[in-house]
Length: 159
Image (cartoon, rainbow, N blue to C red; front, side, top):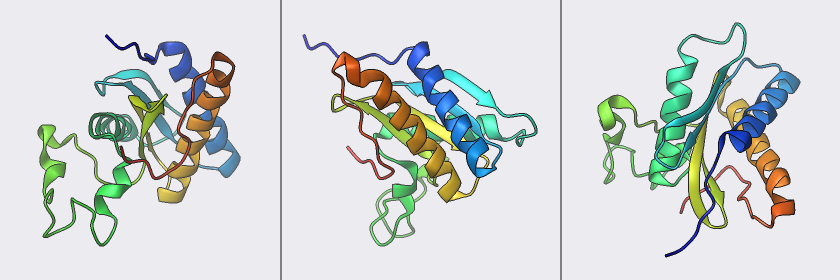
């Protein structure tokens, strides 16, 4: 049997707080969802006055990133994005009753080379959602470094 890191509420809250701090810094109203390895929310927060559609979209992005082990925007990056017309996964966004998100804002959470969850952000443009997501991953890395865990901190993640 192999042991692995399991994402818990404490880590999820640190990530949400970091994403919200970054969103305030750049002036965007975000909703942030941190999900476990199965794509189910551990923490979900919508900033005051953020869009009412944000929670579902952020959850969908976290679900997709965790379950498919890749940043959601990579599904539509030319020329080989698998969800682009003519490619092998075209139409995948209708899977899981439409919960599969194939646009920017979802990132797998990778600790010690294993996907332990996903984070999804909704409210900004792609650049803003990415900045907030990377800030959350960076905060997790800072939290876990003293415990000798490695966190993958970048926007383009594909395992």
